[in-house]
Length: 450
Ligand SMILES: [Zn+2]
Picture 1 (tube, rainbow, N blue to C red):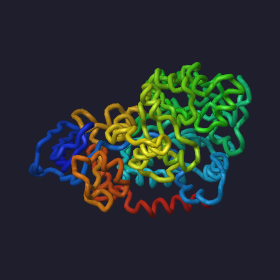
Picture 2: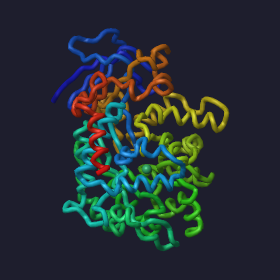
Picture 3: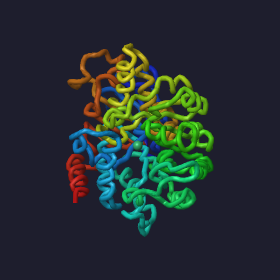
Picture 4: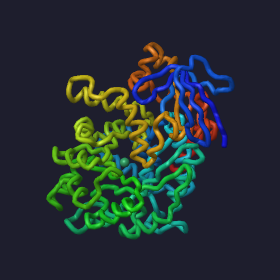
């Protein structure tokens, strides 16, 4: 097994920044971590700057990357944005999606991301006809992650209905949504059960939302995830219209509906959790259900600011995602958590930099079912990323304030190295597997324009 020695000029070890840290890796895992090494040992690979555990991007829809910039004209709401998003989804095939996702995941590696949670719902051909391999789209995403050198949790998503009609049924999928639907939760489970895990890939489940999965079918999806001890994600109360429809049909909030159907729990993550009642917060926190916030997308889509601080206090661990990929920069997601809260409350200091880095690393990985990643300690997967402390953005603060610099000053452009399973995927700011990431992105987006 390949053994490697790294010397980290500075490293964030979960609470404090240490100067001079030696990390030995073997077989893709961290074997030993030694602090107090002022100079690199002979033969060590030198990582100048601040090394963090690899970042987990806990919520992604890779194809939304094709919308970047193009949706920034005119006015509207989440619902008008969704129409534009659907017009891109209409053009995806296993080949075009593979090319786009490979480039998007390469962009993530360049931003320090070592693991992505892909909330995947474009399953079938337009009109809803299954491909010869009914998992062709999911397989395209798993292959794309391998080629971009990062880990993936494919959160295969049940999407069966267009809207809530009443207690018992949903409105059938519209013509865009036909390709998202397996027809029933049982058929969804049957298709997902064929997907195989690999060294770099795990399989999880997702409920698109209480809009898209009728109440009577929620338990089937939850049971599938529970049986496999797999992560289960769900878009939750991103829009007040979802809350209103749920209240009208079921007489309760989406959170209460999920609780009553066995969806909440420690392996479940609610994504957005924007418009919640106090009872919702208590239900999510009390059950240990995680919260994945995607602040750059939430502000882009004019969603609102979710009660992340109250959720964390109630017991809901935080993870972060770049979701629609308006930007791919987990440092920006992390600082937005604190800065949004400052705007809302007109006071400072709701999150420490260390707490936000934990959300972007250990807690993010845990939300994706990779409990053994996201820390720099013996036994953990050898996934880490190094940011420059001498760029125009990060120069100045004392190195011991590295966590604060990472969260409040750095950006994706400061990532120098990304190592996944002991392999350099990004070296000196360049991707080692995808030679020209901007070109790959342009070509993949062009192909979708037809
Ligand atoms: Zn989403």
